[in-house]
Image (cartoon, rainbow, N blue to C red; front, top):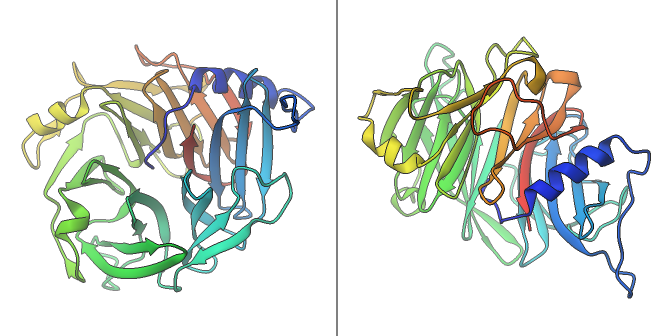
Length: 343
């Protein structure tokens, strides 16, 4: 998901402390009794569909707030700071739902619905937003033949509090994580170690159609990629390894990503040596890292870990040399599926 810059190092350190504390709702108020928030991390999950919001105050104190939604199972999440609305792709109602007052709703309170799309989705997995265009990746088998790989992107536009399904785009690979980088939509090729891009996606794909990716390459060293995040020229790709194993996950960090991606011909491989850093091993607590966020200002990677421990939200800052790096924070979140970072 596209993100807004945050003071991630402060957040990571504080959230680790908070996860070890009995006071999950500690916060810092100013003289008027208002919270001095530095950052917010929003998370979706497959276990109850609610939004979990981690608030970091000015002094580094973190509070954890569970915000009740209409969904029982959600993947994909986006926060709009201008409208203060958080949007999820619901796997329960098979629609996009936007909720009002996302940054200020208290723990345990039901969010107020602000907008919903029609129930068009079949198996939504991720959500990427560019302007008023909301794209949902959906991994339901399109042609009904499980021997052929295919997937679909549902393209919505949002005007005020109205979602409109503009068109659907079918592709010849299984889909999961998606991320806008400028006008280009990057998509992981599920069940493989490949990464695809669709240049000028929103403006080039305005009607229902089956299209080919503009380019597709293999990322050496990844067994099965799922999540991706981009910020400040760096791309992060997660590796879930064997989906049935909860200890073999990892992630790759690719700095100067665009020039490295451009230098690889369509269908060829981006080598690890000289191009990528891999984080993996027992200390990482990674098994099935299904989604990622990245803050280039503090070189911090955030991960939604689906399998290890039943689900976690993790962050890592000591990633420059890769290897078996432990997380800076480790917060339990059953069925963690998606993240969005906001400052």
